[in-house]
Length: 48
Image (tube, rainbow, N blue to C red; front, side, top):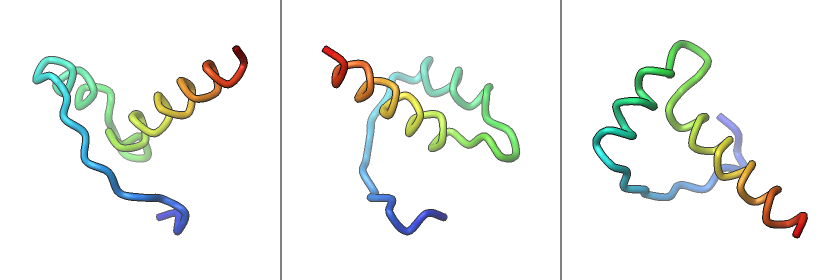
């Protein structure tokens, strides 16, 4: 695990959680998918 990670708690809709769990597999965790979505969002808004 990366030592630079900070722990946060996020609540998601039940259906969104099910969809995320459907994408998860070894090497592609739900946490990784959420981190990537946050990173993409922050990059998007920093370009404005």
